Length: 168
Image (cartoon, rainbow, N blue to C red):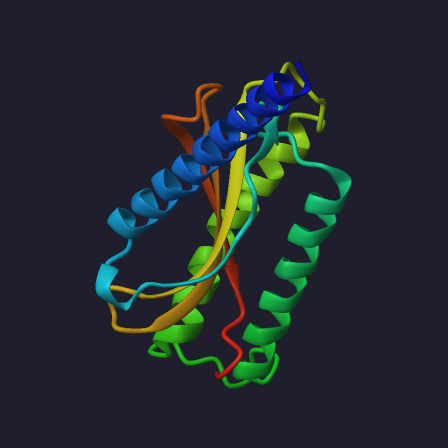
């Protein structure tokens, strides 16, 4: 009896791990297809799939992390432009970073307007930190959140935050 229970638990755990691996592979494949130069894509970190409760709900820690990232991006832009006293519209790095930040802030505002209410379980979310190259040939870093359905086989929303590029 114990051997049967142990075997069943092992099978369940292995299938759950396999499903999580499949969800991560799906997110990585989606990311690879969405960047301008897939061969230059470097995946820096991947979170474990976590329960999602709607596409705009994030935990307090996740929101705090997002706001910290946005502060670092602003500080990076300000440092590079001398607090905007040396702003150069031809600086592709700054322009790209500012555009990515504005898109992310729009998403964050929409999330805040939703009130942060935890809805029903809607599926899974995965976060991937990565480095890629833009269409202008500028290396950039970002974290992208992927929202998957309950079965974990379809991505129905992504959300991206820029990350400061440490070597710039």
